[in-house]
Image (cartoon, rainbow, N blue to C red; front, side, top):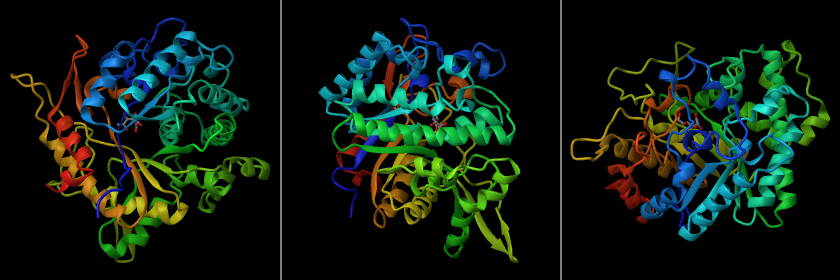
Length: 447
Ligand code: GCO
């Protein structure tokens, strides 16, 4: 058995991480543009002002994907590039840029998967309270409608938001990402609720604007508990869905969207923090999602010892990526099953990949064998899952080295190396290997 014939073999990027051109034409600022102006927030003062400069290399980057045989490309729209004030006015330049990208993808035979929001929140809306503002769902709905209207002829696959766990959890609660807020849980829960309302309004809006069947989902940061032994499966699943009183769980976000209710185990936490969601809100939040998009890099093993739940520390032999994330290929086997059992939605790996400490060698090559090994191991696990549950696609994070948020350009996830001085693109050994994976519809991972 192999991956389905129309499996979406893809690569992923996000606007702020690759576009650069932060001050092009009438683009509005976003919270990451502004965050990078404050010293101490981002590694060695890096910013996405220029970075990979994808804005000026868009044709070349699509050509690279074509050469790699990529079938699907997940990218995001920079909200304030398209709508400088977040709502109202549309930028002609922003519109032109994304239409140019979409036309190039079409020529190259690559299916676009468009993320509406990958963290670069318009600064103009942030100044009006951002996700705390009760109007924020309607702002997002308007923006989603504009995207559907302008790009709907090209786009059948929509990812409403990327990783609410991070832009809300890290961005508004623990303060490690833009807008670098440390709000009390009561306020962060309001933000979260508005994000869910925003998703549901956007989902309905897109379907009403694009008059044909489209696929709509979200991309969730999913860092699951893994069964140490086969018999720990149910325990690991329960732990994954438990309330840890933070914003990191996947069911905290997915249950309301799929079932129209928050997970029961979260109620005591909500009550302590004054969140009493109105029944009408929950009915509205319930959305029609077509797939469950997941971003997974690793997880934590769990087991039971003498009746107690324990998370054993990894053995020193466990390989770690340059993010210090443990290489646990099981993360792509058990966890998609937990979610399919819960939501009965087909799974899409909207992100998976590895950061390595690497550089161009004296011959101008990047022989990233460890990346090939990482993807091979994770894809073997996913292949095993795909024998049991529907899996529609896999997007390697990322097409190119890019701006890794607070880590700046210090972490390299790309299949393509970027020289940030010259803008030169160089395919790494893994890019050629991934091409073979795609051409063989996955058979290459068993070689
Ligand atoms: C996220 C984002 C990506 C990251 C990637 C590697 O998960 O943080 O979706 O933008 O760059 O996951 O950390």
